[in-house]
Length: 639
Image (cartoon, rainbow, N blue to C red; front, side, top):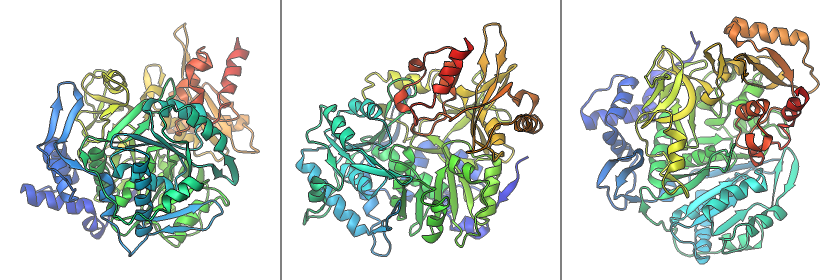
């Protein structure tokens, strides 16, 4: 039984955009919806009516109207058409919220003064960059790429690119050179923009030489790399165009951007989303499920290489001020991010679950400002971390999200009409037909199952770039359950109709035929302040037996003692079952992650089963190139 943490007041419910949308639908469709489950069921049973009502409720600007809302493909999900015949422009919807009453952006870098960017300033920057792009011959459908920090420059470059119908793609500056080449070489860009340097945790990282080298490896470029804040850039953004920003209308399914899978084992997949699909999905997700409203302030700490950067940017669609915090969240002080939130009274706060978990042993001084919502994603948020956040911010709604780069959104999310229970995501989002399947492809309710999506969504990829016959697309989602999107997470529906996410299904532990989600193990390890991070795998042996080692990264100056090992095992046994108790607990120097923040259980398992490092993982995607060395040596020593 999960603990009830928060319950919305009647006023909170009725002031929410989700409540207003429910009323809109009830009036339009002449159908009373007394509860959220009824509204959700209508949204997935009447898919065309639902997405038509989303477009109408948010007053989406169509330059030409649609002929039909949804056209199913003979292939199932792949090739489905949405709003056929309609044309629009995403950036146009951003600037219709322009106002002199509040800034468009607030930008904070490490040890630098806060920058407040007005809507007029942002529009002027975008207009100048639009003229520069056109001057370089960039046209609708061309690719413009960046290796950029999260900053007003990256926001303006995307909007300028989108405004003329070109396609955006971006990597974070902390990506290794080879991993950037692997991504950008697939999409044959015409222009490359880059930061010459970036700062993290007080240290300056020079990028200039590597970016010049990168540009020499991208033969499709029509111009040398353009460095932000150097002369070509300054000339571009200082141009007085004298003409208003113009917006090129493109088909609903025209590409808006190309994102990338983690590329853990091979070349990253170039995931291509549509302008119309992203526009509708982000309006729905941010307004209805995160309750972001005009005039509020929104932040989600993210790099440009994570889809949450794209998601956060869409808060501008709703007339919110987008707040950006660039650099280390704990520099120059451990509480720098929390101080920034309080100082600038940010209504909607978001970060990866790992940040909150790392903070949960800290007692924050009583905050003088209470955010409206606190969002978390990237990995499951443990019940105790829910409780810690609620204790620090009693009035805030804790919004745990789960989705993926694949849809550039969340299909499990918050709900301003429903209570929050520790460890549970509140609801399935509207228009998202999510089920949990067992091994036989049967939908289950009271047990852990594979997360599947049984109906198409507009923000699903239109295709993978250069995947001519959709073979990679098919292989990625539709092999396990034909005709059904298999997402790769273990979930369970609760008695409150909420959802618990247990982690990646391909990393599931199997102990004597019983499946254990890795998140259950990590939830317990996170309660030990001595443990900085952990990773667990299950190794199957030729004789039919298996072992389950637990690897722990200790906090600085702390050793893994026999007493601590015993305490960990006892708590796992007491909290869950004897099957959750690892066979061994081993201290390691570092837990390995990809650049996008994915914990590498599967590559570690492969290495320990004898797979060479170069075949177990693409080293270019590692956050720390040496983070797997421990396991390589461990295997060698065991032979």
